Image (cartoon, rainbow, N blue to C red; front, side):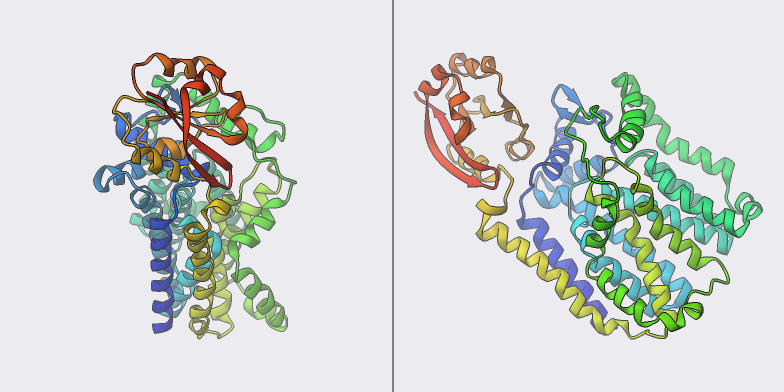
Length: 476
């Protein structure tokens, strides 16, 4: 058991160090970090903002509320904006550990927790600014609460089930209910639990509680930004997944991959446990009948939990790697159940080695950002630091020349950095009575209006994965 605590502590410390030292990178982390910063700055807790005058309709606000709230308490920095993801991940570990403990005791609980914590996908997401940790927490709460409500006839867990549904709708919308509803429906169908389903869950008061959590924000969001519901429900939750040529994304681009790519993402997310599991299962082939007995339906439940997400997204036209995160908690319980049935309760002896593998990969990432930022960084933090060292006037402008919005620049500059390729915006700098700054890629310098170029001089050159960026200062 001491080995397990050591491994878990090592993973936690490594994750905290990475959260502190690695800058917010484009595009996902920096975008959600800047959306949260804008929420805190503007005090608009209803409409998420892509830019100051542009609403962000692609996601509900739960994860943004948490990040903005933590920055309000601890200041605008990487650790504060990322910390909610870490706390939610700890909550997922607690739910999984408690469930394994109720089923099989302390060894099972620690096994499930360490399998989950050291899975590479879960470890990365645990300290990253994005909506997925909140979604996975809500889905895990739904799945765990449903099982406890059904198997233990617990009224408390019945209400927690509906609370998870309500907050799930505030993370990524209907997908939280779809991806938990499928395995629950199939389990009830296979086990013929329709009567128990009706008796053991407080459907009327529970649904009222779910709507009380969810409905006010959805109605306010539609009132503030008419058309939100159509774009979000139809576009982001239906067209994105069914139409490989969907062009409706207003805030980025559709992530089109060959169908079935989710399985590769899943193997990556489960590393190194995917390798351990395959090898071990092959060695147990003579005991399959014994290991897969399912008297109470628990094994079927966790198999459906683990398998639903990759099977569902096999048919999706647009996916990203984070979709695999939703099945990892179910996988950890499945691995633990089969491992304990095989009599291998001494799995803890592997934890230091597994944690070291995961932690080593994190150390490599930290070292890469620290010593080789030009090769791996996709952040504007260094340029913003150089601009701040120039001690710019309070009302001067900082213009990033190019069509791509630089969210990290906006985050680290407190919203002062603006991205544009409109010549009119560049010409305004010549007539605003302040000494301004421009950041431009060296290859894009020629596209800057000639009259503007003549009034600015290069005061710094900075290199990262996106190329060489020039910091220009307006001449007196």
